[in-house]
Every structure is written in structure tokens, then in C-alpha cells.
Length: 81
Image (cartoon, rainbow, N blue to C red; front, side):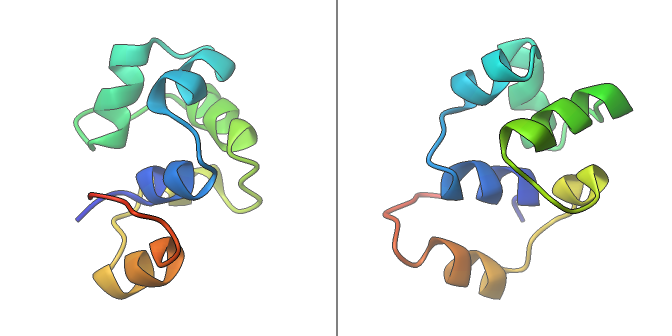
């Protein structure tokens, strides 16, 4: 299952490169974070949450998202997860 981070990035219509650059996170490291291969430090995930205009707990972006929620969030987008 993808992480909420990926779903929110897609919903915000931003590329990984854009989020990484705007949050001052190395692009390769951002990719690993989004794929769940590494856990970001608190300041990193906070900056990422700010770039995505995420209002909840930044750590919630690291949770896996059920398929039903993905469908509802990306219904109007042509997205390959």
C-alpha cells in the first residue's frame, strides 16, 4: 500500500522533485521516504508537510493508505499507483 505522503503529493499536483526541492530534502532521500524505505527526521517530515499544506500531524503522512481512500482522493486524476 502506498503511504499517505504519495497520495497527498499527487493530490497537490506536485512532482517528487518539486516537493524535495521546496522542503530542502535530497531528491533521492525524498523518494526513499515516499516509498517507505527510510523514516525521515522530524524536521524533514514537518517541512514536507508544510510544502504539501498538510494540516494534520506530519507523521500521519507516513501511514499506509487503504485502497478505498486512495480511490476517493484520486478519483479525478489519472494516476498510476
